Image 1 (tube, rainbow, N blue to C red):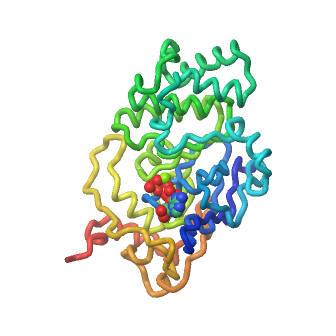
Image 2 (spheres, protein in one colour; image 1 turned 30 degrees about the vertical axis):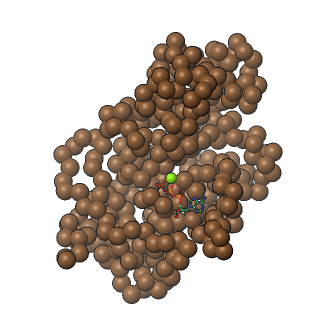
Length: 339
Ligand code: ATP
Ligand code: MG
């Protein structure tokens, strides 16, 4: 197999809050192969944005990368100088931030904002930048006549497309899009995901698509990394993780979201409870408290992330019983505790 574009190994990212330390990402490992879309999925607060931001090394003032490696084409992003890292941003690794459609500056036209990247970062002259702006708008399906519009003149979906155009401006190899379709209606979600997929294929790039919605992953991704409470619970190809999930958390997420394809979906079953407080993580498996299948060892010992088949990794003590647990997980009563 060819070397992945990105290989994250045992990444640790913490936040200092007063005298407390929150290990928001606590030993995450995953690969992003070239030319694929990888879905990074998990509930709110699981550490998805923290991973995404760590990859660009644009992290909060109270955050620090406290361990691990992020190997991008063999270079460890963790140990690059700020100057070296800056040279990679936009040109090699581009980031579409969470709520990107609201992060465009309201007082400048979108062309002005594209030019900031194209001319300042990319060194293009005025004519080249104009041509590239038109090309980028064509790529994301917006009339080039609208380049001189201000962000508020666009719909939410169009602003999201502009944010994607901005990320693609300097031909990066990896685009990290944090919740690119969250706040949009399902039809617009599908249009944007379809377009992202087309562009990803046409340009041969890799995409990390961060989302809390597993149906978005099912719709467009090649691979999945499921995060729970700062750790990777399961990762692998779409077929292995979503069709035949082995971690009970993945099974639970699958039951909790409607199908983006519009197929008649059965009853949605939420996972009761909430992720643990990361300032005081539980000693064993972080999902144990909410897991309908937890046994004693789950509450005392952390399950390591293990490869159970080629390219399919799972951190669960009961991974060997997945076939039977999947059958049980398909029943609503497994997840709803009787009052
Ligand atoms: P969402 O789906 O809501 O965007 P997420 O998976 O992206 O969630 P993160 O934003 O990475 O989650 O947050 C992971 C954990 O880190 C959470 O417990 C969050 O409260 C905490 N956290 C995030 N940013 C900070 C910060 N600047 N200071 C302290 N804690 C933070
Ligand atoms: Mg987030």
